Length: 266
Length: 273
Image 1 (cartoon, each protein chain N blue to C red):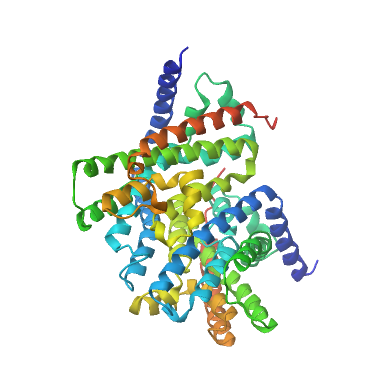
Image 2: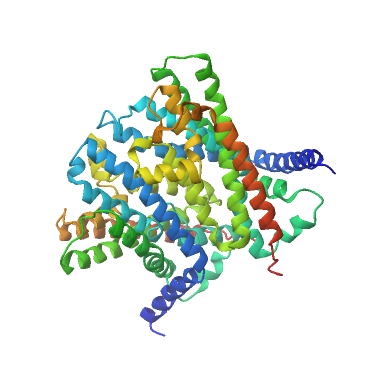
């Protein structure tokens, strides 16, 4: 089997694994929709008080909310994607089996996580977004161009999201327990990805800072690309740069870990 | 055995199981302290979002920052207490799937007490501490004409609110017996509920406010009584006495949740695995 086909198969496996739990997916759709409604009202009040906050008008703020709910599970904003399994495998020692496989560890988990992301996007993300578009005024592009550009930005966002969580998971080689790291991933993800408030609406110099961190590649970039608030090529370059840096860091850490590793478990 | 005997037995079982989990958490003291701080930090994110908003505005829906902090503190503290007491009930779906729920059914202790105390997590004190700190700050910062009823209403709100959220957890658990994998639905009401109540009622659509007042009476956790304390108009022009209804609402909610739990337990079918 060609290397390409192998990773496609792994990704398909990740997709199918999450597609199995239909009731859980429906429950997730419901929860994301409820949270979307709550957030929309608070954002409408905020933008009522301060029109054009962060350069968005009300319709754009609403669009941002629903895109955020759509991507919440897709990008595992609060963790819980491939990195959870990887942490478990490192903790139990099963990682030894993975290292034996004639496949690249990082690419294997990237493929698996992309499969998961894709399912979450289709199964869990589309419905809340459509619900939002149906019941609230949104700033959606008329032409196909921004939609396609947004899809590219989404793919890059998935890679950046994985790269961050992969680094976190590898730290378990040294820490042996992933609980604290998972918590850190969750807090940083929720805060810096802009799921609580669009990053361009953060005040002052702090606002400038959060917009150059890798988490900005996740919701803010796809949202700005979709609403034509940024030159798509600039957004892609930003996301790709972080993807390359973080994946390379993951690779370095991975080789350091596999060289020193004493596998846990019996 | 009478109702009272069952209640005492349930509380005793809960106490023993929760105590076991506390002792196990205390074995790794550093880990416990770190995860508790993490828990507090995580829940503080909601409040940081509110602070970021108020860094750029003076009022949201006509409410100032100390007033919203008052709502937030009440909502987060009562939810934190409910989360500590019954927050692990979302493992019920997993327990049903892997068949370990059956073990709980044959033990000589009330099932609700067993599942409620299952994986009792002391680290959740982090949320209560964080919510309590915001509430404390709000009480110091907000401008209130204190009278005796208002002073008494504050602790009553926290306790009744916790009971209302507890009833949501129990009703959610009953729902999980029917729809095992769908445990996330309950998050929409519990976590969604506490998030909703952190913002002033004036922000939300009339229908939504009506829904969480008359159908799912979350408004009695803080919106209605807090409006009385702050001397603000009530949501939906409710009558004056509505501010003192929270304990009654809490009792009604707990009774309804108890019935739902019994019905759910009666409809339980083991997966057989």
